Image (spheres, rainbow, N blue to C red):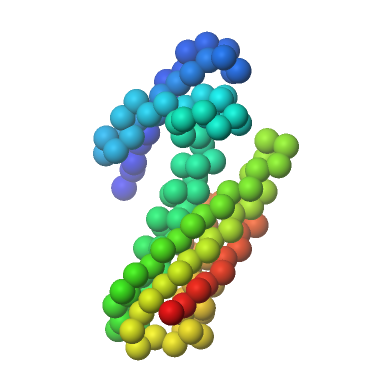
Length: 136
């Protein structure tokens, strides 16, 4: 499997701007720039996209492990926080809230810890990755 995304940029770093498009079309000339990355202007940025990718991958890995145990999640909601210090990504924190009838809190926590280390995006990153689980 191969997936692609494209970036287009015009201008210098601080005043320039660009757009991102993905193979699926879900990103289609989506705005990104220095200002969207560091100053809060509308648009996306690489760290936000990394957070979204990691949240999605981690949540799917948790769902897959729960399904493998014979349970079906009612809901799984993950927030991924990417930390960047001095232009270096230094960590990702994954905060998942889940509801799975029949699963114990201990089982849920064990599944999330495994997914924290073993989802595809986690394995691709060389930064500290942590997580916390909230089960209801």
